[in-house]
Length: 78
Length: 217
Image (cartoon, rainbow over all chains, first blue to last red; front, side, top):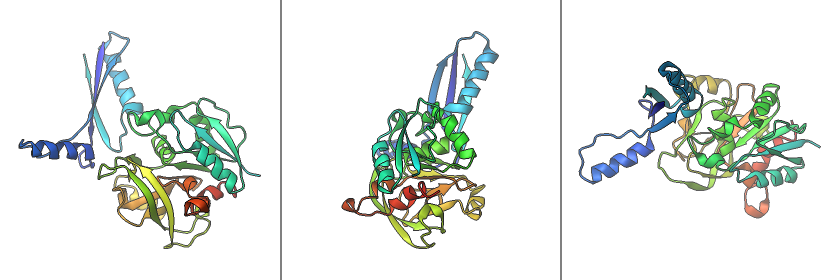
């Protein structure tokens, strides 16, 4: 089944990528106050057990996919 | 003669320059491979610059799981001197062998030039250069802004773990930190490239201080 790990910069952490994208959107005339750029990881996990899938997603996020100094994450199963 | 190992990761670029720098300061350079676990009995280790794993995910985040890194962690825990340069610094931070993390330069530009670094305190890593003096070493990085949350920063300062600061706000680094050590002082990391500042033919030779520390430990 599929597990998705959504990663966002923590509040208050400088995000140069989001800032650059935000400036471009404003330049195009969109009323955008701020953009925060994150990452999405879709994991195809080898289990049909939702709890096990969530555990794999959480552990992968904590050990590898994110660095908790600068990022927070959310795990979505299915 | 001190034997200094230089680890080649997948995507290391400056391993050869680091090996040459070791030789120039009077050490015996020993090439090490990321896939090995044997440190070949070296007396000190350099994690060189480059773009391991293409900087995918986060800089250094994948190389930290290389087989050799468990041996590096054990070597560091036993007090062995370890120097991480640029990507090597990023790997040491991701491996929790040094505090903080390297993030994109705030101006989103790759910076490649000589920079002045102010000595924060006297340290064997800097050949006992006095605090307040300046050394010159080149940088070449896009992800060189060292970040550490406010909590714990004063403790790092009080422990004397900050060795060098940028003389200018170069890349957005927290408190302009350019070079830090672990609490024990035997693991050191910096974004500037001391291995590129060892030969008078190319300008500054201040990099000999940091590389030289590895053969005088």
